[in-house]
Image (cartoon, rainbow, N blue to C red; front, side, top):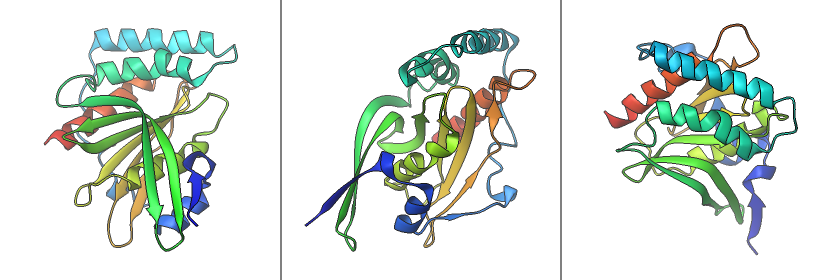
Length: 208
């Protein structure tokens, strides 16, 4: 009998075990978030300053993750031009992976999936601001592993509204993933500038 498992219930350990995933820590394997980053205009910085100010005002209240998407994620995706060709955004996409040797089907839904030519190139996983980004990592990695892309890196982006991180997945014989630094709206300055710049860089890479 096939056992159904919800992706949201998986721990990071379980995802690593099921997919034989290895986390690596060599920064040279994930230079995409560090080098050749596109510039952000002064006008865009002003908009992002307003996005940060709005979020810091809203976070005083209990927030549903849909509010987080509207307040923070939507402006980032807009300025990164992920709502424009050749990208195609889809929401609440159902994903299934069948683990034949274990008789399991893992079900999940991607919050926002950015598609280019039917390939999953960027996975966006939003989580309530009360959750650590570590809570989003297992789901994001599960979705990325379900991508049909094999010969190219797959990039992911997770946020809980106030914190942001990027993931790079390499589907080798032994799949490996590496994380970027974590960015936060609770620090001095506005790290949304860098987050937007990285999103743009990843967008450039997957359309080359």
